[in-house]
Length: 96
Image (cartoon, rainbow, N blue to C red; front, top):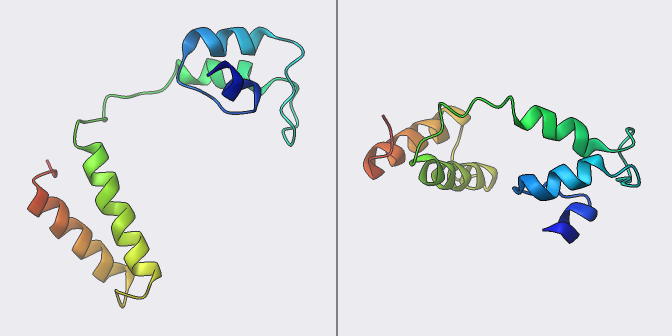
């Protein structure tokens, strides 16, 4: 994870991100601030995860399938893809 962070990826490891965020030598190319990790790390602590559920991975997988199918022309409209998404989530028992 340390190498990933050094390569510009924000990893899910507080110890690594704390160390990288405090390192003044860190410079991620393409970003206009010297060390973006110090900014990102502060924002992470403010995230509201109260709406996250155990069903999110299944819902996301169904969503990705429907987006791909829509992009492939399998649905005539966004509304049709949305209805299929809701139906598939209902069938899978992942809607609350």
